[in-house]
Image 1: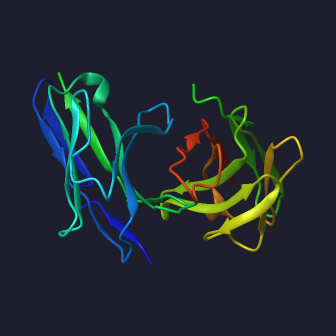
Image 2 (image 1 turned 60 degrees about the vertical axis):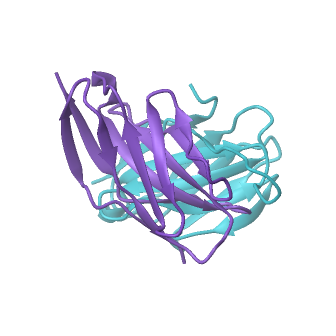
Length: 114
Length: 116
């Protein structure tokens, strides 16, 4: 069975700073996807970034980038030049390559302070 | 707006009751997934339907059931409700099953269920 662990329940950073959210996972699969989802106060689940396990290059989406360490089963999210609108719950998530369900971590609540 | 709609947005009911949550997938999407977000369990997968058939099952209680209709909308039925069933229930949809290639799951806005 796959598990996803987020060890930081809550974090706060000043606006414009860089913040890194940690995530580790456990799986015996070789091909899979990893995700970071954002859940703002509106409760909507928003896909921030996706990483395919067979790709060595770390995914980036504008101010969001990941550090994917497959051997260590680590998948951290870096948010650069953080903005007030980044305030949200962030979920790390896993899905098998031929997958159906997404497995989520418990989440990290991120506060961006003005 | 993901294109996935869920009704109702909020539902308040009493223990022992039965409710039905409805989900309309994005146009063209054949797969529907149900997830439950609760304080105790976090976000967890309940069940998946593909083109009317059940494809995968997660931690779904026997008191819960779902179905997908010919027009591809899906309903999640929750019966004999308990206080612990209070949660946010998400529906997501994707084009296919994901078995052959990546299919992004698009999440609806959720239905907030409160059991009193």
